Length: 259
Image (tube, rainbow, N blue to C red; front, side):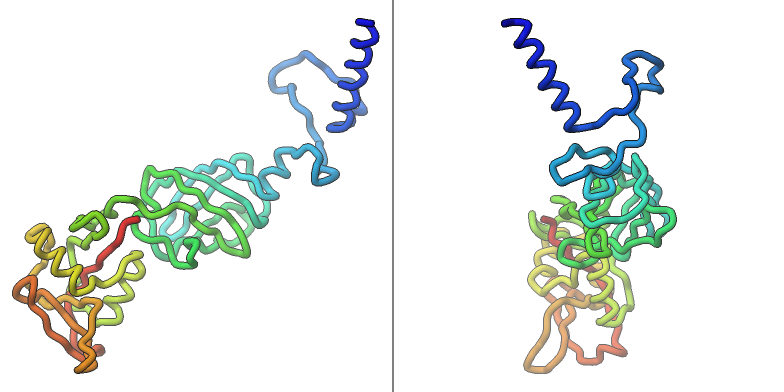
């Protein structure tokens, strides 16, 4: 009875192995370390077949990458290498530099760099890609999407006025309204509202550089006059308005909301 059970187990084991990989050459169970491998495995025959390394990586798996950042492009060297881009490809890497705004990913040598976006389609914000942090991106429909949320703390160059409000320390002087607004958006922030500016000005005070040297653009309007507002020329509560968007310049200081 024991022999029959052993024989049955052997036969079943053989069937299981045969169901995964069909071998047409002898199997060697000894040899040097660099020879202990199976080469030439084809793609899985069906959706329920065993998945080899290439299928896992190229067709929707994830892999770790070495990274080099060159200006606006993050060059990744996946291990094992990726030779084509397919929807669902997931890559992880340790950022070696801070990056935000217009960022591109290049991970296949013979393909162009691909834009990197947030899940909402916007550009990566300040604080989402910082040196020394692990980043995760996924490829779909011609774009890489950054799955990292922005940090819980204020990004570099900002100070916390409250748990949910960061103000830029150093404003950029003499900017027109629309470029000032666009600059903050490119950082992943926005112009401060009137209430945000007043709170930040009173809480942070002299920690904010450039206070009371010029008016500062804010995200607020005077509807009765069809103008936009500015704040902070003389005190935290100073306010003026202007409709001359294309000629009047003011300081640009951005606000940022950490998640």
